[in-house]
Image (cartoon, rainbow, N blue to C red; front, side, top):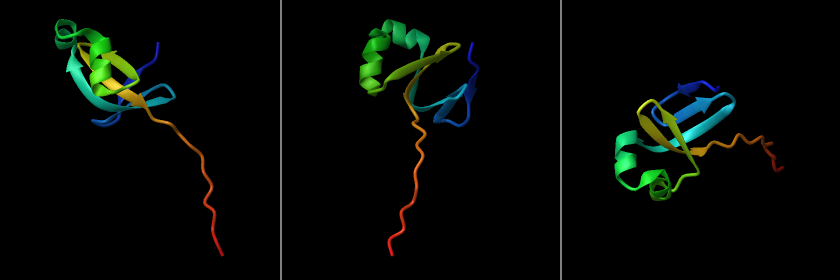
Length: 72
């Protein structure tokens, strides 16, 4: 099982994966107001993570490698 680590108010790390949190809501609010898929569309996110009694609506953070090109 992956460990849920909240680095800041907006980033969650699970293993090697990082997620940008767009919003969070209680499990009770989600279950009584439309369900997870409804709120996933409202927050416009790809992933929903749960920790205890809270759902976190997130998008993955993509780690990219780049090289700076210097013009002469």
